[in-house]
Length: 580
Ligand code: AMP
Image 1 (tube, rainbow, N blue to C red):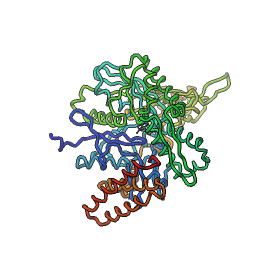
Image 2 (cartoon, helix red, strand yellow):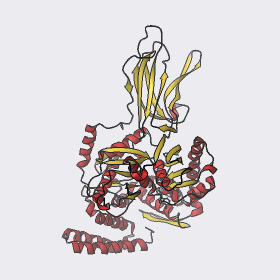
Image 3 (cartoon, rainbow, N blue to C red):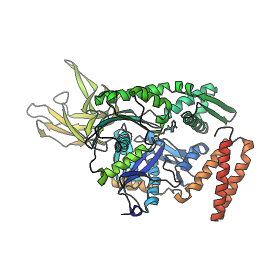
Image 4 (tube, helix red, strand yellow):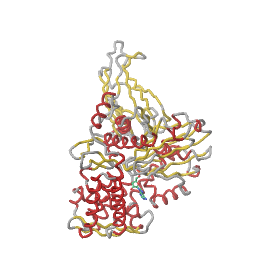
């Protein structure tokens, strides 16, 4: 088979908070697929263009500042919740927006191979709850994939690294992204890659680092708190603070300088002060690491490597922290932005039984404890509810199925409520509720108490099924009931997927082949807004001229105009006193 005729059966997708990537397995290695701009990183940003078409990726990200009401980023944080996002006059859920990103990636795959690939492995943070996982799978189906399987992000990073690791080693993946932090400890033994422990914080990421800088800017510049209610100001502030943070990964100082109405902000942030500002975030990174090490029952000296993933692991302070915690320098042989997508491609290879991976087997774990609420007898005549009764302990190898029996509080109780939770806390109020349902209890005729058997089944995609069966002795005594997951993120039926697919299909996607031009115009418009009034004229003139070139539909004229505008944009960006 030649490379050009090869079409993979499955693609691997890193659906990130900040960026998304798609890759495939071929000839013994994972390969990334470029988007229409020739880049492998597609910003996970969706914007409604002025003509009503949907923009995904860089062009959309450029519009975050110029059109904040028509552009949405970081929606992954809303996955599996009922949160809605307004885009122009339409309202979307996070899974619809994710489906639009996945559709754009699917188009890139089609452009690369000349046909669709219908199966996908999509990565999710290990700490994603059941509802968040179900929402991710739904997004894949709504995007038109016929089959979607899920893979924990740190496991994906480990798969990418594991390819190069020697057998019989243990290593830790430290995955610090835009919105989540995951730690996993893996063991590679006789070709079997086993996740020993996973821990994390799904509300800790680069966004929190940015928030520290944002607060410092507000305080240092003495800005009124009301400004945080203005979307245009917030997106400007956010972009500047994020850019300053990135700059501080290589430079000793960064300038944050922009104008908003009567407010001129012009500040310089030094690396030492920046690291003091973000200390609370750095402190929070410790706990999941400690938990994972404890759960894996190893010492830091047993680790043969510490692997970094996620964009935020580029922060020098994070690298120093990792070096101090583990007494060794982290391994940085793979690009942290790409490592998860590469691992998803390895998993795609495993799923298609690629010969080069024949010796490899992967096992994963359930990252958190799953259980139901129960009551405890606190005195002779009193029961107190609200306790967490674990059924599947965290870091149990998956797939797994466990049953436990629960008794009613009194012999004549007719109904038991099964309330399902995820988390490690003693009391359910401190854990995450997943859903609940009632089970009818049979009436006992022989004085024996009825009970229910609660079965938890956790599959390799990390999706949970809960079934409760009422019983009298060993006999089933009534119909079983199943869990309905809260937040309406349950698995969609084929008809529901078709309906949502139809609804999204009515949205016109911006043509892929015109993406480069659209991204350049969006960038020029963003830059125009950032320039001072007296600096805008030439750029404004050039934008208008290029729009006329486009109308002419003359390919030569368009190419010339494009090159001209590109040069000017680069010049303005390099020259800008505002540090754009
Ligand atoms: P990810 O979710 O893995 O794409 O990571 C994105 C996060 O990494 C965002 O919060 C970015 O601001 C952050 N990030 C990307 N590059 C850098 C850098 N050079 N220094 C610090 N943070 C970065």
